[in-house]
Length: 118
Figure 1 (spheres, rainbow, N blue to C red):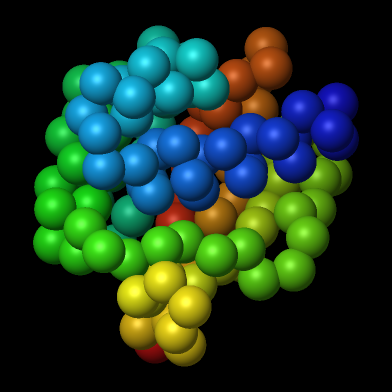
Figure 2: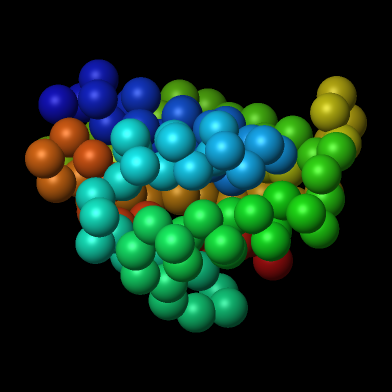
């Protein structure tokens, strides 16, 4: 299970939040997330693929040239995992950093908690 959790964390960072192409982002959401997934972020709580897709797309549109870079290796514990990351212009110091924590059900992300460093 820990290999799958590591894969989900890394792919979510790149293929959902780092993806600028709407069709590829949506395909990744459908592959990586449960239908009833819940996203917990500072602006609020978003439920389901449509809400997650809209949030990730809107966020990506605010900084389309930014890249998400993992900080360290993902960690897994039972059905949960975490991954620290940074986001900023490719090859430069991140403009902001954070931590993703996921809860996995049936090999897919059921919940994602995004903690931003301030």
